[in-house]
Length: 139
Image (tube, rainbow, N blue to C red; front, side, top):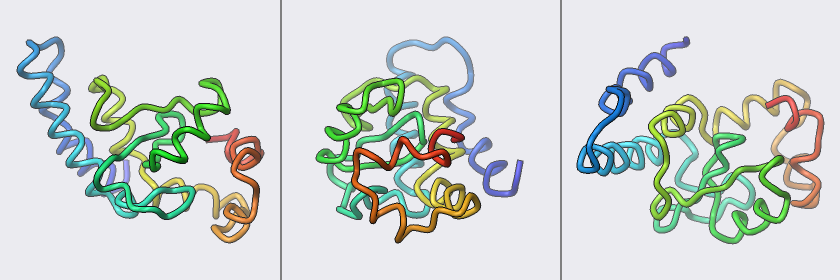
C-alpha cells in the first residue's frame, strides 16, 4: 500500500468489522459516501466532467465516480464491462466501498496515463469505445 491507500484503509475501518445490524450498515454507507466523494477528482464525472456532488454514481469495475447521464451509457455497455451503482440510492457492500476508496477518478486517470492513454485521448474516444480499450481492460 502507498500512503494514500494505507490512509484509505484506515478510514474505512468502521465498515470492515464483519456482519452488522442494519443501523450499522446505514452508518457504514453514509461514512463510505462521504469518503468516496472526498477523494481527488471524485466530485466531477470521470467521463464528462459534469458535477456529481448531488447525484453520484459509480463504476465499481473501474472504481470511478460518474454522473447519471454517463451511468446510463455505462449500463448500456453491460455489467461485464462496467458494473454501475448509485452511490446514494443503492446499498453497496463494505468491500465495494473499500474498492472505491482504493481507486477513484484521479487514480484511474493515473492508471490510464501510465499505459499511454492521456486524458485528452480518452475524452476524444466515443464514450461507447472508451471502456473497450486495452488499458481499460487491464484495470
